[in-house]
Length: 225
Image 1 (cartoon, rainbow, N blue to C red):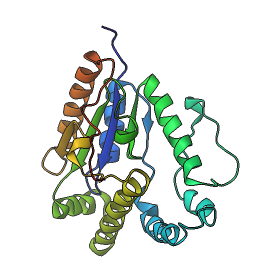
Image 2: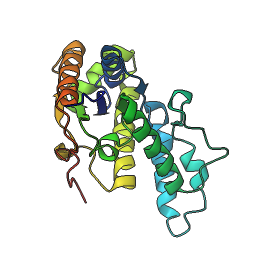
Image 3: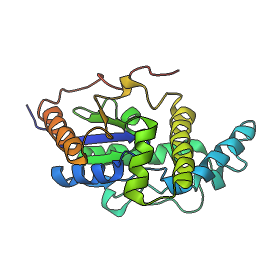
Image 4: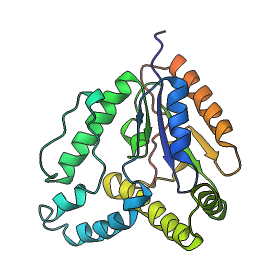
């Protein structure tokens, strides 16, 4: 059996320390790390943009360029995918590009944060799909403690960020980002130490890669239609 390079997708809610966990997983597996499309810093803008897009659905060519530029660009030089010039013209262009980048990255081994990657790569042989979550109040306390945030600002960031990430997956894929059928491994990152989360993900990723079948449909089920 050919051993596949590990592929890990991580979906996470605000306050789980997911970026640090994701980077540590990538380091442990000696893989590149592809960060999320929706950092907390742009969540409020993105929610407003989703409302704008909803009002323009009958004329999708209007305004989408400005909306799509809110997303962090995906095409990195190490992936060999050139950045398109100018703003995105349609959602389809955005999705085609981002999904192409993720699939190319998966062919070489990668850790991908967010971006609906568990959906895009649900049939990738041996990919491990992970969800990091925890009770909202514990995630909030964790974010305040680690980030030194003002409590009121942290409450706003949590609400906006979690909502924006739910909207992203619902808007593009018509699925619930929290659906357990999308993931192989779900961890409470407020009850487990970051090092424990990293160790569990790394072990599971290696096991999945070593026993990779020709095709995989265990995760990425129907979710919310």
